[in-house]
Image (tube, rainbow, N blue to C red; front, side, top):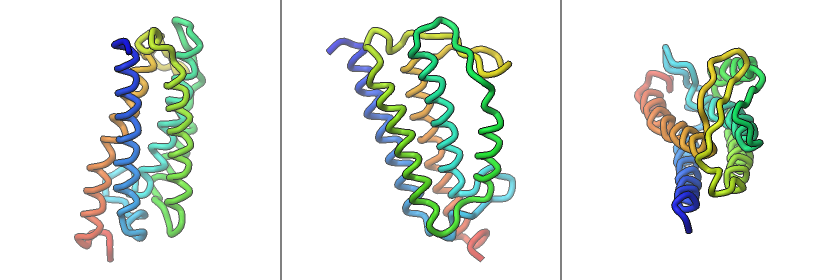
Length: 174
């Protein structure tokens, strides 16, 4: 196995582990806590999954563009999709809504993973210039996308734990 293939396999494993850590912390939260929005925060505890899902959708689009092979990828502005998801994420989740939201996470995660697995080892780190709408272009490869989303899952694990602690301390459980 070449360096690129080894790097790709390791990134895919870390991607799966990060998703599992994120899902586990949400599944362990008491159902009433999922609607808790800490004053000043952007997302309620349960809303984190809705935020993660819109980010997964975004990076599926980015990876599709990068995989087509052009040096420059131009994608439609998806800010309206983010705005709608984030408005809903502030509301959090009610009883019975976590499982379907996490099933959506699993589906999106699987789509991104399948796409990433299909990238030839020699193309894993090949970069394209990506522009979303009229935003500034940035460089991205399949490796970059997987690292960013893995880090994104990891970023929200301690945030979810903190929100649950705050809720349990009485600031949200009353």
